Image 1: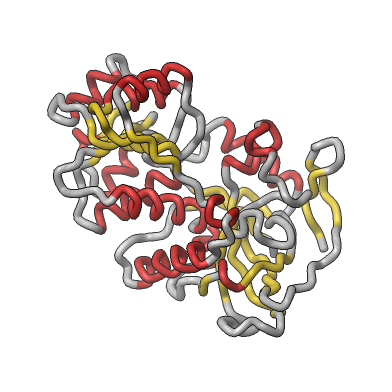
Image 2: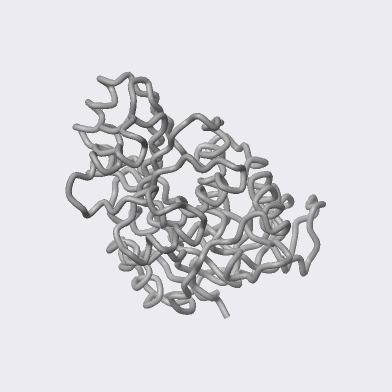
Length: 330
């Protein structure tokens, strides 16, 4: 089968590989669309992420059609339209035509959305849902979300507003992204441009000059320092990127902050596969009942090295413009 493969020199190239055979508890999915995530290119550059590579084919989320299944599979039939975040739990990654994965991480695609929309959901949707569920925020809490128009931020804001929580301050970098948040339901005073001067002062001013109960940092590096600075004593710093700096860690330690690390990978590591299915089923329910909408997406191209390299470049240079990047497999 056609695939984009990581060669022995750690370079991506167009290639072919064997079509996987599903194990007894697995389904074989013909991939219709796959999604791109920062971890895809970070695996090529970052030693921490590189340890997560389990296949020469990268890519971690997909939508598609079940074309074969193992003898012990009971929850799906051939022809079912599904989506899933495969992570390192499948026979290979998603930059290819087929993948075999445990049925326990797969969910039926929401009926009212396309394969393209479905492929844009798993990573950002499960991450945002995990943040929301673990925070258990109450109406009096104040929450800062950095990088709010990225995939996770957008999904988290939709989830929060759908649950009648709106005490949010969000950072953006462009007027276009400000408008995206206004269209989601945030008010103008809740949206701060991180490129303007006096960023800390502007963020605190949006929260009635009070320090925040929670900081959800979806950017890291310099923004981890800003987030740490505007947190109250014993506040919660939600780390989604693992890109804190020495300065931010010192500030968080001095403030006695609670650090909440967010990881979908943890559940695969402990073989807690129902986490994935249950999360996707919950997201499906919200989408089918039109409580939330799926992410905005942009098709980068069809399955090829050129498409993958282009998507990685857009992600690295922060040029997604609020869109989830996806690749078609037709």
